Length: 338
Image (tube, rainbow, N blue to C red; front, side, top):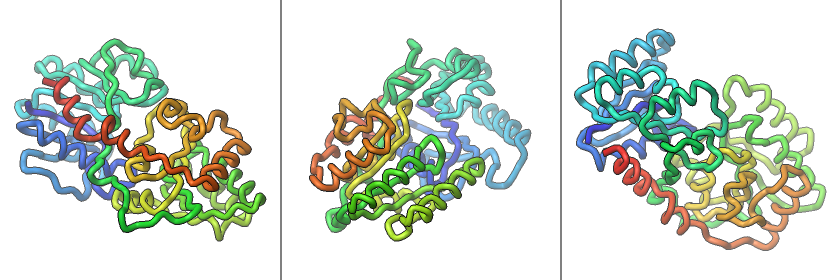
């Protein structure tokens, strides 16, 4: 099978999408040829049967140029792929779907957002299959939608045998944005300090330009609550840095609400780090003691305190390797595409 992948970035150093290079590598093991069209390319090393073409964001080209390059590539390389796999961005299905169908290509869309609109429904109509990981994804309701593993590189995200966990260490890793509820997390830390609980926190991630003021507010709140000695901000991190953070921290807190299966939670679990999450999709996996049932400061404080005191030692790595590895994901998607 010859596969076309359309994605946002091919760059191992991208703080959000760096993982996708590993996805492409895994798909290449099952395909005769893989052609990748990305909005932006950076650093990567991929097998010889993979070709990468950028729409030009790293060069600062205009949106009109993006679209021109997109149509140029899907036409120019139309004999180099049998299936078009669009990762996350439904816009590419809207732009190319009709052409792909006219040329006899299958169209596969990976979309895992909780919200959708008319354009999402049109993208679904233009797709042969839709892939999702969360039961609360907007696309999960359609008959052509298929539930998929999250796709974690469990050979890369592993516990650090020589890296001891820092006592009472807490990690908060991800985009700095209101949906992540970091402001509520900071309030909980303030209460923990008042209770005399010893802890250290690492906040890793960066805000998009639209959330710059929110990040400024978070940093100001940390200082206002006298938490500067307890909390450090790392900014954006690479996959290697993220793995090191998972390996050295005892607890990973994620307050993103239900609607998507945040892969960072699975990465933390694969590294042997205890997760505490607000996503209710995880209740069957983690139990209620490791799930925030209501976004309430007192509940967050109580559960963090309980985990730190009782040193929760449950190991979820086997669950991730058996159900959500990148190898399993690639095999399932390729099987559907053929």
